[in-house]
Image (cartoon, rainbow, N blue to C red):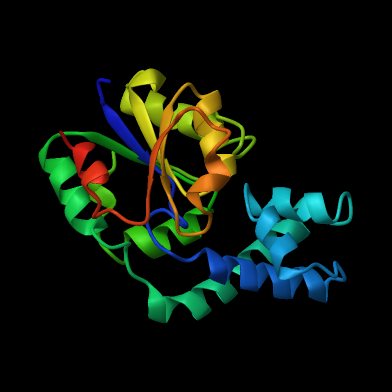
Length: 217
């Protein structure tokens, strides 16, 4: 397969931070009366923040209220995660090699820009990416394919020539619906949880595995 572009999810794919999102949401949602287990909150941690709030509390909050709660949640998450902020093992070198090899790269995330900036500016890696697509850039987030299709369009690459790197089943579903292959990063989910998705090439814990390195060939 001719590989022209690598499209990265952010949270759980470039950094191992999903448990901090889950903890922040668990606290906030239950303070609002949701009475959800940590496992249930984990299942709901996909898509835009306002979409998550609407799934749990349909029709309860205005768009402005959801925006404020979303930002407050991200402040809590960043405060808790900042001491642990690091790229996944091997990712820094992987990005350098891909960039030197002139492989197109983009970030396609359901995060708001505030959280994307938190990572890419801290590590000074923005220059590697020809496109960064956030929650603010799409109408509907993953598993809708819009995020990754916008990435491909901004890179001027055919969707069929993109490989998505994702940590979540909903993200792999979005890749499949966009006509893209996917590589699973197993920070939050086990490889077996992606068995239903035929677009998955392989799974890896980090960016040090031989299979990951073959993406650079």
